[in-house]
Length: 209
Image (cartoon, rainbow, N blue to C red):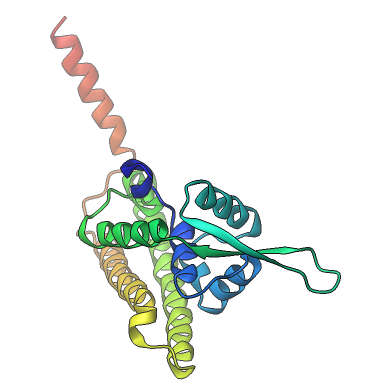
């Protein structure tokens, strides 16, 4: 598999490879296991994308159909296993992800970029709502983590939950601090400040003509 394709493996593809490294499964079992382990908190999971990804991984030779299973009147299910190439790719990609920070385009960052178009009160109110929402998400994930640990999962197997909870806590603290600074007038505020930037560019352009 080309190196550039390896680096672009989706979280869903990695989840499939990881589960097949445990044992052969059919797609329905893959989806059920992902939901049981709450992988859907970190990946976009639906049957359409799952089957599409399974087909792509098979074409790349990373997984292989080993048998077909038929139960009653249910449609026949294909059971897949991980190939040696698939396991090698899984290990390589996980290593790359852990060691190399990736440029990510966060939705929240776009909101921060254009926050100055709101009034300070509007912005502070929205940030307050975000902090509350983050608190609810953190509580939900903490409950999931505790349930999984109580159910016999090892901490290492659900370390991604711990990481996400820590990120949410850090973001919530930062959002609350910025909200406080806005309300206290410590963050200089000027609605539509981008308009001033455009004005400066026009002024600069006219002076050079």
